Length: 288
Image (cartoon, rainbow, N blue to C red; front, side, top):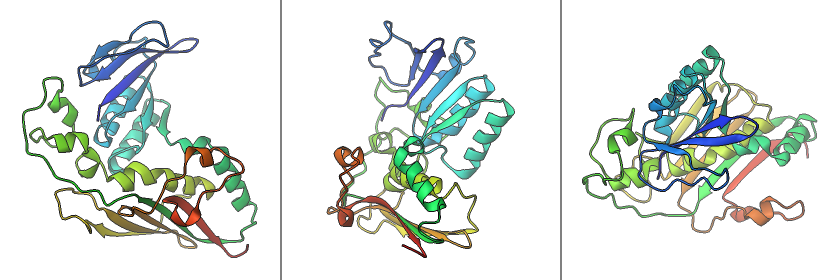
């Protein structure tokens, strides 16, 4: 996966003036009439006063440090999900946004979706009665075999040390590079953090953004393939909020499960095949 950070110079409309990538490759600028300047290290451009905001599209282990640096440099930030690699880093990002008076937005598209607002209005109207339990599923297709490759010399087109950044220093391995979400050093799992964050965040919006749960129980593991991947291929979690609970299931083992198609997603009339739907939220209340 490419690590790319985009820096935008905001005037009447945004222009991409820097393209920051640790890879050597092509840079395109057809949509704005000129190519952005390509640089490998974002620290070299954060002092540019003409840069107003940054877009951070990296593996999760880089999100916090890049966001804090940008805030310290007086830039606003759009950072992709998952917002941070862990809870502590997320708190530091929030502290930096407040301290330096910056706008920091996360890439969670459901927060702009009309169907989520409509669901929130329905639940808050009391039409479902008192909400007791919510189940959130992210059951992706699988199982997916995996064979970790041997360590080797990093390609000449890649700055592996910069790719690792704040993560532990290890020899280059194409499996870690291309499948980084399977390793705790860089992410939290393809299903658990890379995908289910959308369904879990949508649940929080519908419920009115509840605060922190009283407690969380989580268990899982590598149930299908005993290989070198760190993250579970199935994990289940229960969030206890006192008067209601959220049960989250995430995995990639079910070849019969299907994500909703774009045709159904953007239709007001079509409805997905619910039984085999891999990504869904079910809310249980005391009334129909």
